[in-house]
Image (cartoon, rainbow, N blue to C red; front, side):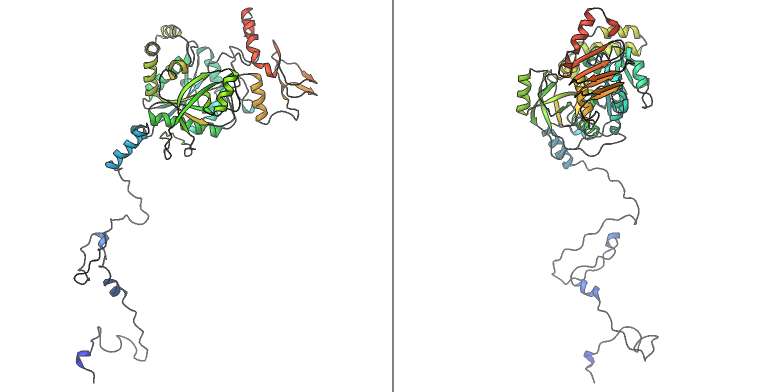
Length: 488
């Protein structure tokens, strides 16, 4: 018989098993895994629900860290509650990092984007097709025969910004006709009583934007430019707007020069100041994709239409970009810089807005006409304003001459095998590299000629070598001096 001290009592009822036929074989018992776990760590059963912890199974003197109680979790499938952002030492440290980079911590908050389209040109570069009453941005030179103004509005759609068209009162009706179907109406127009250059025009328009949204970031673009990559164009504008919001300053988009152009302005690059992980804080109803990571620099200055030798030096040095006239700034920053650089212009614009608000449109127009004409670069940007420049690369042309239009159309895939681009009723036999715009109801035929521009509008015919297309301005000056205003 076994030693009684070695007899182990079994739990449960007597016998081989309750309610089990004795003829069945006993099932082997599984080892108790929980017993093995008890020797390693305390039981954490239900501790995530903050229930009282059971007594520890650890032996005395053992030094094993107990489990941390888990936070209460929502039921499976439930939405996670939104957490309030922590604003402790980490927030202050982030603000210090932004300050060291010249950025504003307050600019991290999303802001709305507005775009001003400058559409008030006089229309002499593409004479005789463009006239004072029908400037370049109202000509059907865009994709599919649309006007350049409409093409610009459609190009900006991915930004989801609020768009205003800055024009002169004499062109307001024509601009509205070109904008039909775009969602813009007379409330989207900012009309100058008379053309006074981009400086006063933008000052007036930014005041109108600031009255509706003081925290807005504003972009300024031109209505008569050709762009070959709309996505890259919008991405560069987005980046410039982000820099304007982050630095509480002014920004511009510069284009990597393709050749030594003497008809363009240049902007000189300073130190690169783009943080590697920074993202533009600007948001809009239809936000763009993440930042493309375009480099940004401090702008050191502008050079307007340099000589050929100087332009070649700029291109070879790699520290100058073409100035496209694409700008971005917060409404508050532009107002501050305009006030510091040209207080007389700022005072005059304040009077114009006050007179308009009071219903005294005639007096407002007279006061605006008294403002000296000036471009925004010498009026504001070149007078000590803190300016960033975003370096971009996309097909672009300001369509400043007929030869520019010919090149842009060729790049867009238009033209025949000989490089001729024929518009209207025109034929070419043995001609190469010619541009024809026949809009006078007559057939224009080219035979054996090269690199010519021929434009027929019915009341005027222009024939000029493509390389000398810039000389059209001389013709316009001669007509004006001779009193032929009906052709202008």
